[in-house]
Amino acid sequence: MVDILLYTRTADYRHDSIPHAVATLSAVPGFAVRHTEDPDAFATAVGRRPDAVVFLSTSGDVLTPAGRERLAAYVDGGGGFAGVHAAACTEYGWPYYGELLAARFDRHPAYQPGRLTVTDHDHPATRHLGGAWEFTDEWYDFRSDPRAGDPATRVLACADESSYEGAATGGGHPLVWCRAQGAGRVFYTALGHAASAYDDPDFRAHLTGGIRWAAGGTPTGSGS
Image (cartoon, rainbow, N blue to C red; front, side, top):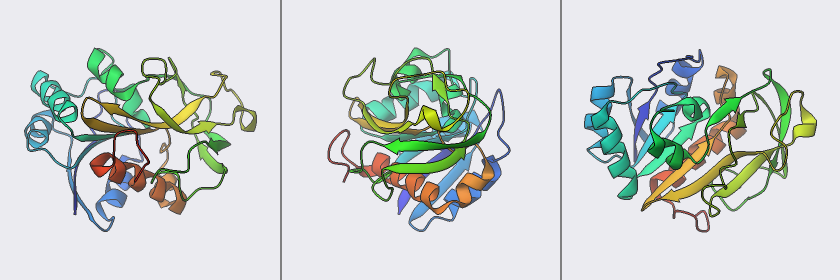
């Protein structure tokens, strides 16, 4: 079993999809999910070193000082972290979190259909996908390229900006990536805005593959 600490506290925008996302992840075979929105309970639970910590559409400042300290120690000491969608809209005032995730949310156009280009199939989050992935989401723009602070960041999929209206990033426009943080493993996907995403078999395989990798894959290696 993969022991997952799932955190969904919001101090800013709250996604209506959170309850369905929690139920979906809790029903995944092989996942043992502990879900909380209590920052004190989170600080205690992360100190017990689960296999992976998942921030699912968290927003704003959601951690206590103790929670921040223990999360940093957990990841740097070899723990796994997965951020989903609005996890990039979280803890703007904590520099370590920006380093951990490698990019912070800037803006998004309207929720609409679009296309991702899968740039790395040698990873559990993307190996089931073809070269192009049609999806409907908010197509996040970020304040910086996740590779800017860490060139070793491994980009797994990018937005095809020609496939939707309102793109503002340009260039490769990463939407899914993974990286090493200390001795730990970090995975992030910008997808997952709507409840319907969690009913999509390709998205479920994408998300669970990323979480499993964070829980036990090599930091930036072959994706096994």
